[in-house]
Length: 340
Image (cartoon, rainbow, N blue to C red):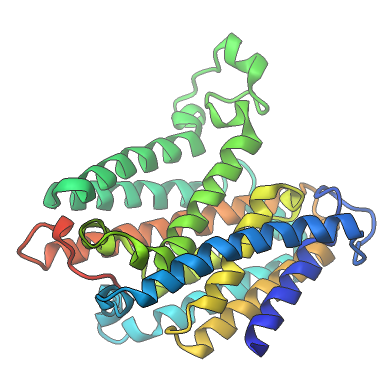
């Protein structure tokens, strides 16, 4: 109860503490009753769905999906056991960069700099692994991975505008009039819609899906268990949520932070130290965003880091699905166990 109270109260207080979600001249720490009620309502709705699904999963006769095996990457010599702590350290390191060197944090996230290109590269890696795993699968798993691979490749191409600045071609005139950044891509035609959909999909895959999968019909669950993210990829995905300074007024942001809060509250089979570490990361990360966000020259810069961490989480997830699919003789759609 104490753990849950800390998570929920911190999430409500900090996430509801702004009514604009844009660059602020001062830090707002006093949410209005309306803002607080709005965020609480979202949290309550998310909690009802996830808690109900989690309870049905625990009551199911077959509890095998509740005890997945270790991540394939955790078996790597020397570095394997250190990967999750290293991911946490890396996330806190990015927050330290944000707080101590905002200009550098901002500069690295500009167009054609390391953050954008690393995001695209990670998405291409995720697409390649998902596609390779799909070739080994069958049934719904194969279809999901094939569609996922195509989607990941498309998102990667969108991220770098289909190599527009590398190849030097211009943006079509009709698209220029609609595109926020006058680039050869579609996501900047409706940036908020695409971004929030992407962020919500990440939260569903890495945080909601592990809670609800046990409540699925046995046959479907057996086909999808291999897709359950590991603790390593979930760490990176959860860390991405805090990098959202310019988007905190959007319902999708509140949905993602509440999904994370309920995941940490309900996922009691996970190590306590890991859940506490992620809880501290969420609270400190959001505090850093509100404290130092106003000093950024581009108040949307944190979203570039959110996309980077989301892409890295997807690359890790897809690599692990591929590794699992390469170590089992039967098709991965038959259920080969999730990873930790």
